[in-house]
Image (cartoon, rainbow, N blue to C red; front, side, top):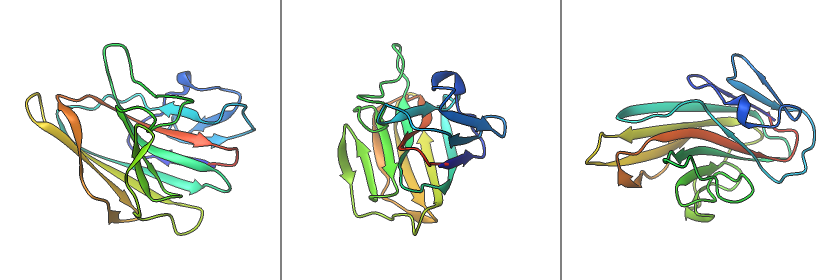
Length: 172
């Protein structure tokens, strides 16, 4: 599998270095060999807040694997990935699964029957509207140019860490 981003750097310090290859100033990830864990969580170095943000994740080749693209909320204790490194396992993380067409949080599909990749690759956009302090933030995934329904964050003043999770070798 090969995955790349335009504006954010992935945090290579938080992942198994012998399994993933980081290139293009930590904006591209390639899975090199099998890994015993089910999912590999990969956060970015960004902590976004107080503004409107747009991120683009370019999935070049999913092959036989699965990917989750989205974000976690940052807390005083750090972000909560939930179980096994799956982005969307916690109540404070949201993931888009382009193989099933679901927005996932707390291991549940918040919205299904959404666009899927047409084949092995595609682009997932993420719009974040993160007002300062008193207003609730919102997010929208955009799959190959098709917008999903906008969802709200659970509380105001959110700080967001964009991230991905990979399952099975051969993702890039």
